[in-house]
Length: 85
Image (tube, rainbow, N blue to C red):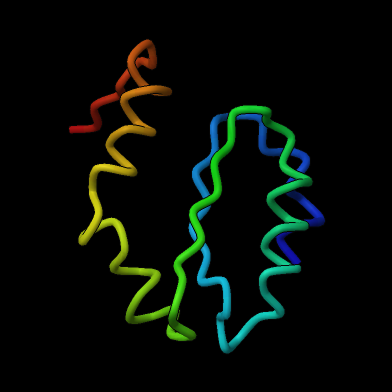
């Protein structure tokens, strides 16, 4: 139940969900969790025309990197990058 803890998320959030996911009660579950997030800086991307999370959701940014790159560009420019050696 991620929505139980969603209000604690205060950093920018990019959420991706398969709208008709075969394993969840979407779009209701994902939308409720998204709406509960404690940040105002949030975006939701719905993957349409599929029920397959593993094939189509998890590979989405590999096929459409411009969406995640635009989000990072908008929210990470002033962030400090930590390097772990």
